[in-house]
Image 1 (cartoon, one colour):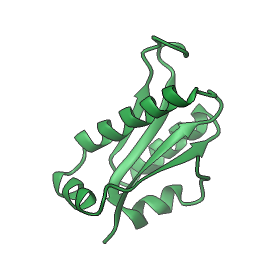
Image 2 (cartoon, one colour; image 1 turned 60 degrees about the vertical axis):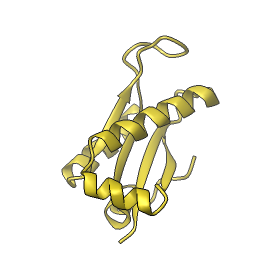
Image 3 (cartoon, helix red, strand yellow; image 1 turned 135 degrees about the vertical axis):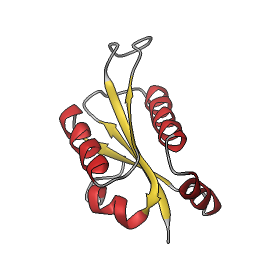
Amino acid sequence: MTYKQIILVRQDLKLPKGKLSAQAAHASVEAVLNSDKQKVREWRAEGMAKIVLKVKDEKELLFYLRQAKEAGLTAALITDAGRTVIAPGTNTCVSIGPDEEEKIDEITGKLPLL
């Protein structure tokens, strides 16, 4: 079984690279902290694969969040505090997993890479 984590990033926000990287890191850590410990151990043993994908906007971001949760996958929504370049309360990204690659691909498999 192969494990991975997916991070979905909104393209409509046009975040600077540093801000985007920080938001993606927040998403990754939050999902791991809320994940099944055995899945995290397996994922770590395999090298902690993370794939960053694009979504168009908040509507699409929330759609994939719902899909992941309905499928029983761990998912974390990151909402920015608004201290730098975007307004407080802006949903920036979602992380799904770590979980089985096949389960995640059923939901996000057609999204483009960042």
